[in-house]
Structures are given as structure tokens and as C-alpha cells.
Image (cartoon, rainbow, N blue to C red; front, side, top):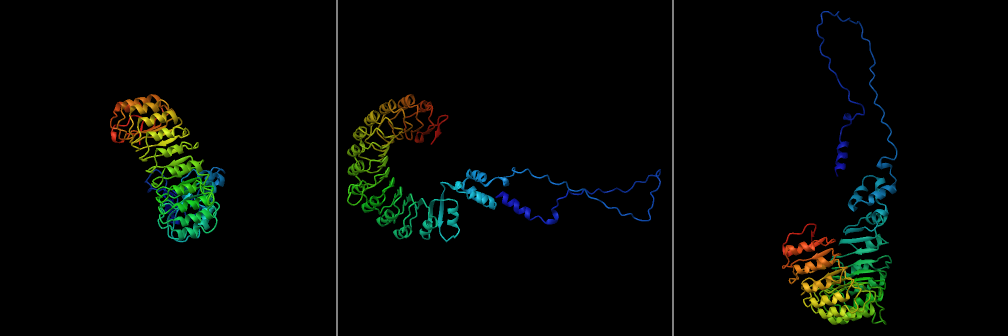
Length: 466
């Protein structure tokens, strides 16, 4: 902005004040002094005109070629512009046509997601995005047809409509009326007016979708999951958070248990079922039987899931991440079932499961040797349980034991002696800890984040307070 203001001021200087010649220095001759010993000056009868030659301005030496930014090749300019932020690239494109062409190079915009307000028609908007190679779009608000987006950007790969509350089945049906073979990611989170009807359109015309976000779409039912299982064979990630109407039957559709109507989604790797409170252990049995490629499952707040359901998950050899946060019916027994076969799990969250205690940590220490992240916030664990996992889980990098009020400095001392790979620890609300315990944990060589929270103890030197 300062550069623009400077240029504006320069153009306002009147031409009479601009000169390319050195300014003349005017010397004022004093009145002659009376010198009696000198003869009087001769008087000329005529004035001889003399031509006064002004010194010529020395020519400006030619600028060496290749040293000015204007001499750089467009490819070099594009490499420079790649290092700028998206906002600065837009500013650079306004400098001149050469910079604009370089800034619009597709290499500068690779992977960038354009955030748009679809309000009034703009004929140049979508051609400009296509020229820059933009293939990802986030729609912040909608006052016009979504059809303009899918038509204006024919190679669209990602469409994010999260939070657009006025998105309806009619609008999506109009936008998805033809096949969109390139679309891989579709986010409809919190689009609460979307129903199973839209999922039918998606299953019919967006058959190559790999990521489908439906979190908060509370009108989705088991019929919608049947349509997904029928049409989206390449789906890898499905988020159904807070879809309260789905039940075990819908998960069975995804698992392909009804082969006569749908083969299911065998390529699924992530399944988000957070707050789907109608699911039971039967849904976990369906997942274990029909979705063998699943690597991550979020079952947090699924209050009907119990220890018996973990027997089925223990059979999934590819399962790496399991979130059981606030599953009230999970106990030490469930951890025993899980560790019988879930040795590939690297991330486990059983926070706020108040039936988890030291016995669960004993089972974990004897079966889940590859754990890198373990969350036990508000669990009924003590120093003895921490000693169990400290001596066997040497790959552990993140440990969350916030609000575990029975943990003392003794437990931190054991952790400090054994967990040399620990990078982050949550001690929020551990009121029985003292500065001595923090000093011990601070000695871990790779520890970089500590959450002290309610303990109100000064952070140790070199520790980042989260």
C-alpha cells in the first residue's frame, strides 16, 4: 500500500518542477569596491553577444542486463511468488501484466482452496480460478445457484459447503444433475436441511467421492446410508457425527451385509460415529465383518457401546486409532478384550470413561505395545497404573492424564525415568502434583508441551504451556 501511495504522489508533481538537468547555482556578484590604485574600467561602445554553453548532463550508464527484477524469466518469478502468502500473490498480480501472468501460474496455486461468497454473478471469477488451476472451493455463503460452481470449474475436486444452513435438497439436486467424475471431497457438515434425497443424487452422480462429511446432518437416516453403500464404492472417509437417526441397520448397509441391494463401502478407512447414540455393540460387529480396511473409528459419546463390542474391534487387524471418549459402559474388562487382538492400535482415547482404572492400564501394557498416544483424562487411575504403562509403552509420545486427581509426584517420577520419547503431556487438574514433580518430568529429553491448567504451577523452564 505504501508503494501505491508513493507512486500516486509522484504523478501529482507538476511537470515544471521536474528536471533532468542539474540545478543551476546562481551566484550574486557584490558591488565593486573602490580601489584608487587601479585604473578605471574601460567603457565599451557596444555589447558583444556571447553564447553561454550550459554543461551537458552526463548520459546515464546503461543498466546491466539481468540484474533488475523485470529481467527475470516468468518461470523464476513464479518460483518467487510460490513463497508468498495467497493474499500477497493477489497483490503481486496487480503490479503489471508480466507479474500477473507469473502470479497466475498454476504452480503458484497448487493445493490452494478458494473461499467464495456466491452472491452476485461475476463473469470473470470462474475463468480466473480455472486459469490458476484452482480445483478446491469452499463456499462461505450462498445466494445463488451452486450450479455456477460446478459448471464454472469443470475439474472441481473438492467442494466444501460446511455451515451453509440454506443448502437444501433442491439446490444440491440442481447442482448435481450431471456426473462429476473429478470430485473427490464433499463437505456438507451442518447442512441441516440435507436429507436422504441428496445422498441419492450424490450416489448417482458423484461416484468417485472419497471423502464425505455429513457431521450434523441430523435428517440423514439408514436409507441414506443404503444409498451411499449402493453408489460410493471408492469412499474412504465418512463422518456421520450427530446423525441421530442412524442405527445398527445403517452400519450394516455400509458393511455390505445386504448384498442383494448394495455391496457396501469396502474401501472405507475412517468412520466417524461420534454422538450416534442409537448404535450398539451390533454396529461394531457389522464393522468388523464388512469393513476390514478401517483404520480409524470415532465412537465418542456412543453411550450404548459396551465392553462386548470391543471383542469385535479386537479382530480388526488394520485398526490404528480408536476413540471411546465418554463411552460410559466401557470398563477395564473392555480393555482386556481389546488387547487380545488390537496390537496394531497406535492411538487410544478412553477419557471420561469413569470405569477405567489401573487394571485397564495393566491390560494395555500387556497388549498395545505400539501405542503412541494415550488419553486417560478423568479416569480412575493411580501412580501404580502409570508405572505399568511406563515400563512397557516406550514408543509413547502423547499422554493425557488431566483431571486424574489420584496421580501424585511419584507417578511423574516413574514417567520421567521410562518414557524418553514423550513429547506432550496433559496434567490439567491434577491437584496433587507439586513443583517437585514438574521438575522431574521436565528432564525428559523430547518433552515440548505440558498442560498444567488448574494446578496453577509455574511452567518449568523450557516447557511450552498449552
